[in-house]
Length: 362
Image 1 (tube, rainbow, N blue to C red):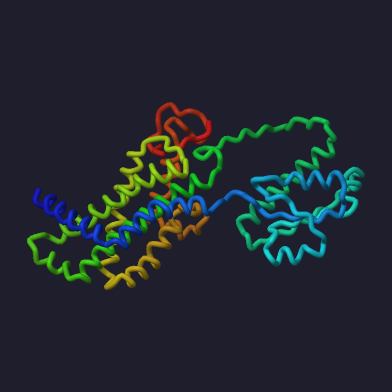
Image 2 (cartoon, rainbow, N blue to C red):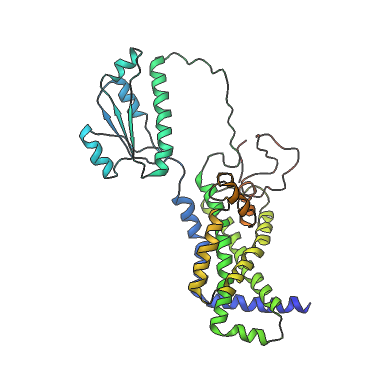
């Protein structure tokens, strides 16, 4: 009982200290509000407003159909340019894609020959270049097939592919990036808050005062874990309900308390790591360097940005020793799957235990 009472009194001291640190308080609030919104909306894995130009050397009906097939929101209105404008436009980054339609293209298609279209891609825009090339290939294939058939219905496919998308039926990047930004910020801010609290007390000389008081070191560390963990957990709730669901319009389907309970359990690791780094570091600059060397690689390799399966085997085994690879993939089904949903798209006989927060496609 005494242990709990002393820990709660010391935790109250930690909250007062954080409220007086205006910069740190503002940084934490920003990280769980504006930073999550900017991260979710600023990075897109879909093709949007790609700049495309066309060199039409054929001037036929078919070439006009191909040009008109590039529509918003994937592409900006195609710009017709001459052959001599291709290199200056690509070098100035005005166009990500340039499609060259050769002379007599329609005549060659109607004659049964196999003419070649040239697509130039600016690979400095890596995300759009990779996705856009495949999208343009599909658009051109569809238009050419419709033109060759000339209104004749296409023969039915021998194999029907039924596509069902689980968890994120619109394939909206904001749904994934918003949730993963919350999880990544939980790790980073919990480590920073706990470590900064310890370093701040050492710099102000209050840590020595605590050590000579009738409290045990375990009570001091427990108070820091509880106080900083409670702040992060509260801001996680605000981020989920206000930013993710309210502003980003990501539906939360499932047990949000289950997700928060898992976050609270994970916070014991994150805040304990922050206290360890704060013990090793002698100042905040040293704490920042240790954070860059330890926490950032741990977050990047946790499976939240790229699948663990794409990493080398030895690195996968090393990362299994750290909690982030276990917690980072869990919000995707936890915050995206409704109870009763299975990966096959059929209703499961009983609710899933790991289903707290966005609705799937039916």
